[in-house]
Image (cartoon, rainbow, N blue to C red; front, top):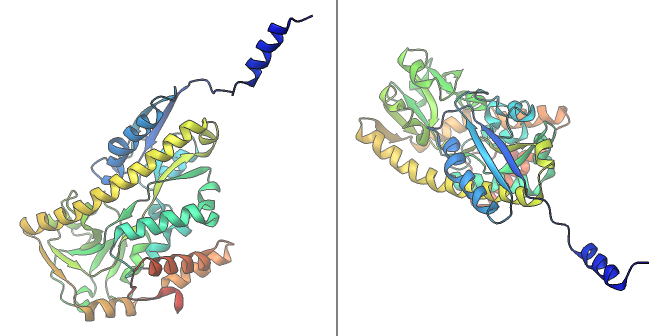
Length: 352
């Protein structure tokens, strides 16, 4: 027969809360772009330190390895690398993976809505957090949306020739990323698909006469050296991706580690948008100081550009609807949220 003391000791032991054993985790982070770009820099400079700080005192630890610049995945291949388990964490770029992250590309089908990247970032993050239809695209592909939305600053037209009106674009070859190539419809320009990693050489070699690009990436890419004519037309800030994690890996993590990773994404988001806003001013000033000619498109040119475009937003939405995806619903949700946030679209793509 057990003594009373033994029974009380057993009861005390079983009443204690279960404490997860301390564990050490490994995480490989992947990005197709090199670390010269801000959305890659934020991983090492903001995300990792914040995660480590959150893990302090939990008993858990995590060692990070960053493989960037195409080391294991090229631009647009990051989601597949994370899905396959080649990396646990990645910069999943919706802009360059439109088949898998289709609804995330809503901003690229709605130009001329807002040139404010902070508004775009906040709205897209809120939609991901509040609307399961937005997160489903990640779930369907074996990854989890962690956060840190990659808002890109207002897109510019950078060319090796002066632009005073849309007539100047007639027949010119203009490089553009992903769905942004649609912005050139109705301008007379010939849109050619491209991305930041090749723009400089393609302009220099005469493959492109110019590109659609944002200032904070144009400066580190030195695009103003080969395309010194910079036209601000208010094409708009955009959402291009976010940090995602492998679903199976995520499900196996203790809650404290999940919380730390989410806190890291929040810290990275703040670091990124603050750094972006500062970088835009620096980029424009530096490019001008180094010989670039920067001017704002006239309101007449902006209006003609926006009104002359095909309504690719409606086409995109209906195509997704036909595939059983919430294209029209997410178009409406995004445009409503942007207007509620204070944006004044030059063209209300959802209302036509």
